Length: 177
Image 1 (cartoon, helix red, strand yellow):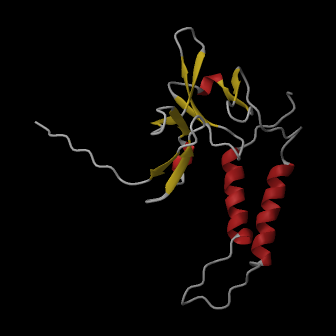
Image 2 (cartoon, helix red, strand yellow):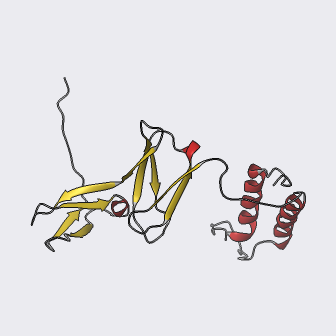
Image 3 (cartoon, one colour):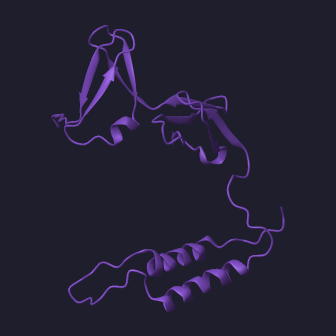
């Protein structure tokens, strides 16, 4: 600690965009474009890479990134037990936090409670099983990728009843005075 140079993220971001524009993306052909070289122009790519090397060479000390400074709040995901953490200073009001495990669909609402601690609530939609009235809790993230008329099958763990949720618009009318 103490030997790192300030890292100018705006400059780093513009360098990244510059390199990606000349070297990482193939231009879309148009009527007026002649032959398109899928490898880009070597001279332009070289200039952008030299700019990046020059920028990174000016950084003194170690290049450390990641993590957070200050107090952190952490808890384990109820489904996959992955440790989830956030800086306390970023938990203002109600914050929605998704599990970082790519295989897990859980998300949570985190809010400050009266004792200056935090309350973690699963972000779910509740349904009632038509076979046994058991509460069926489905993480909201299962619905994010559903398209019109797609179905989500929910199996009750208690009675094995299969319920289908169909993604369709719902209209509600309220008479205004």
